[in-house]
Length: 494
Image (cartoon, rainbow, N blue to C red; front, side, top):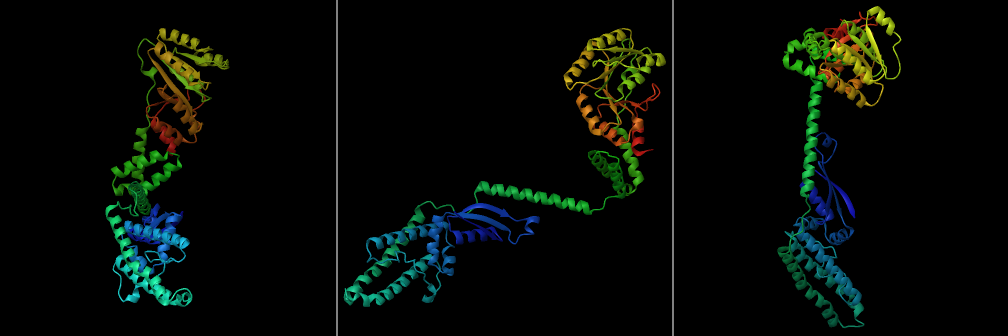
């Protein structure tokens, strides 16, 4: 297989070069169109990789050997089917001549019926060929002339065997028969071209062409997007938007929310307002306050005789025990049920009962938790369950919560997060228990160094309202109802 790459300014020019160099039997392997930014670094717009078998290339080379440059251009400007037929005819005639030479050494070797195996020039005839028929007709006269010269040069060597008349007759006879045989070959080629199906010309396959067009469209689309991005970079951003973007990024606010906020500001505010950083920041504060969802706990609004069961749910040490004590102290005569499923008891139970007059009950299994909740609920009092999930299996926790909701009318599950934990860990906890929870409580907010992380969690989980903030270790004083202003004050250090 002979493979070659062709470069040209147009597709027609490239296909013409392929036909001239490789012939009509060439196969298109790959096509590259250099457009847009990529084409700026290329000399030519079209790059085509074509191939031809060694056999077909050898056949074509034999024909090219007997044609000069002008004849090649004229010959290969014809239809592909015509060129292919002429090459095949020439190949067949050369093969027949070769066999004749082997079997009959006296035969006219090296010329064949077409007379193309010796390079000829039509310029000596004083006129320019208009088509291949004229060229082949002139080739016949040229072959006659060359053959006559050959006869003259070999007469002297043949005088020992033949006289002059015999030699003239033996060598002139093939010359006399050359022209009719050549005309018969031309007629046969024209008949084949007329009645036989024409071979497919060197062109693109439809499927390949469609794929190439899709790639070109995709590249043009990407180039358009790149141009728009460059224009957006070159375009100066309003001063207020620039300062807002920079400030929010420094506070670890998520990039997704920053983009959403800026798009809304650009849509609702005038150009002069966007240049004023104070107006832009006021707009941002109003939007961010609306994002933070806060609600009062369920037990604070319950007036029914049936008590409310509140579950403080966590995985690790998030201060959920002190949060349970603080929240339980808000509701008189409530019961705090501490789950000790791992066998660990509360060392400060007696102290808490004496100082804060809290009814604290320790349990060792889920059945005891449900039993204590039922006793308290029947008395119309609230129950606060400090539940820490130490297992990787979420099903046990899910079964426990579902069992409480089937057994009691009012159950609220609050996920306990710590403000000193990383944003990634808190997001993982919220994502794990999101389907079971009704809200979120955050402890250790007085030690928080990254309020932006808490805002991101709230913004991404707006369906889970914030209930309480833990502001210290003192029970029950260091507890406050969750508000958006408190969170934003921590973000912007008001």
